Amino acid sequence: MIKTHKLLVNTIIISEIQYKLFRLLDQEESYNRTLKILNSKHVGYEFITQSTILKALELSYNSNTRINDAIIAQNAMDLDVEVFTDNIKDFRKISNLNNSTKINK
Image 1: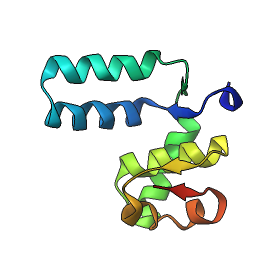
Image 2: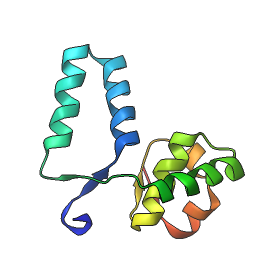
Image 3: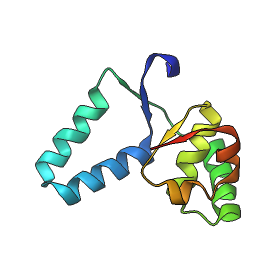
Image 4: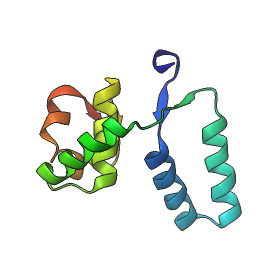
């Protein structure tokens, strides 16, 4: 599944996308656009495992990073995929991510 998609999302990413769209647009438009992302053939959805959450909790503590960012980073490391974000400043705090997974804007 991972190799066939251009973009992977998880629960945290969808939550953040919907929140930002809601702040920029109205409720209906943010709902429709988030749904369109989830249903796109170019987007894959990856579940976050308990193991990833536990490692992310440790990562968050050790890197002084918000838990959402740590979950996204740990999930990317577990899946061996790149992180695309406009939040370079916070993701650079995660040294393991910088060493093992590329950060792109």
